[in-house]
Length: 393
Image 1 (cartoon, rainbow, N blue to C red):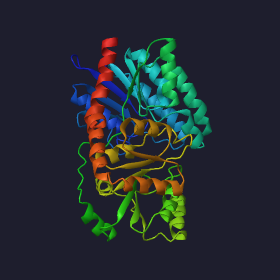
Image 2: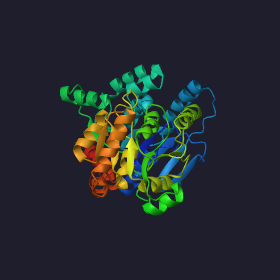
Image 3: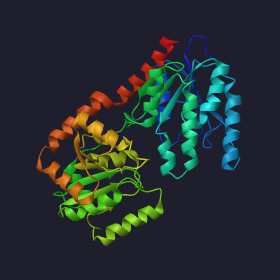
């Protein structure tokens, strides 16, 4: 069995690569290493050698060559099961509801505690993505998990899965599950260059314009059509900067056609893909940040990463009125909520700008981020969960 006699040990199980687009797994692994844990990660990453130490984290790769996605998945589960038997961790952590059954078997064999990062998984995400079978599978996995999971991590304040776990804790069916929220915040090392007038001269050729920035993947259910149409209700000095690209070429073409049909080519700019640090420069030099997620099964509970990226650079925010955004805005007063209709969005922008308090709001939002949501705060919360589990058991 792989273990260090005097060292706390954690084993991560992950169905995709260690360098997946969402850096959450790396943040958690490296946080534990900084706190003195030995961290091993079992994952499937064709870009890395079979064993590699990265920033103190020992990554064990399972290279699955099977092409059929169903056979590939079950082959991966079996490989994870076999590989995990070589370890003797204090804690086992997983990052997908589909790993719950196999992780229960591994937990019982290795006699360790089980932590589940629920992230954005809940039954509604299966409905909206039209993978309807996931709706039932997620529900079943979470129901099974409550009897064996010792700690669970969420990324949102209000989501049905969290309410379910609270309900289970209330009636105390089996045991109490420790609950924590770890927000997806930008890395510490992101440095932004804030020179608003110079940026406007260089990028938009007009230092007197007012930039409305919308950061992130250009996708359905995020209000991009409404964002474009709202420009018809704002005068020429307002520019919309869509900072990002789209994984859906068809949808991106629809947005481009919409821009052209409304004669907005000079006022709506799609940057395309940018490195994260460059994208943060763009957003830090904007005047107002948009979040226009729609009230769908996929997005209605969202507290998107861009919220914290806006806060980190002190950007005043206008958001659609969905559950977690409403809760956040009522708590922190970081901008204004708006109905998700073009004219109402434009009116909300004018209202926020009319108050002439954008500079004050910038300072306020930056302080909110530093006080409550910085990467340091997320690390502290994460380590508190592990400390709590060790004390509890």
